[in-house]
Image (tube, rainbow, N blue to C red; front, side, top):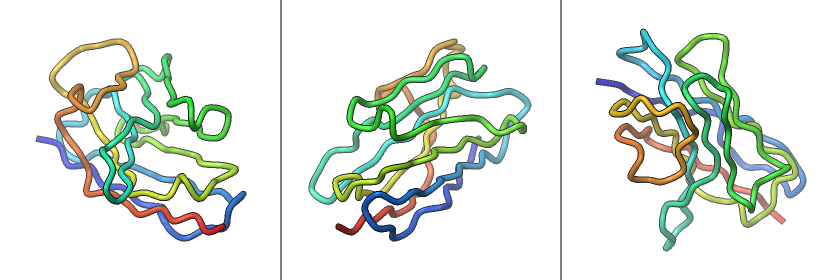
Length: 127
């Protein structure tokens, strides 16, 4: 069993920055493929960024490429999402996810790839 806890959300003006953190509690003797997704009101959950268990591979949604960076902390159980040049359309609840069912070496980009999710953290970007 894993528990994922996100933090770092908040209200920021357009053009500003935020850094989201996700800490994994539980069976953290190994690293897991992890991702960030977001969901705006009335919309489906969408992929934002992902990182492989080793950190060697990352992937990003086209809408955030060049502005967001996903990374792993020195500890196996922490993942970050650095968000720069934020836009009002980035407003959403951001969710951290982990995959414990496969041994994939790559960054996973689909909602169905993940079996553990955090509770979400709200990001609001004002114009």
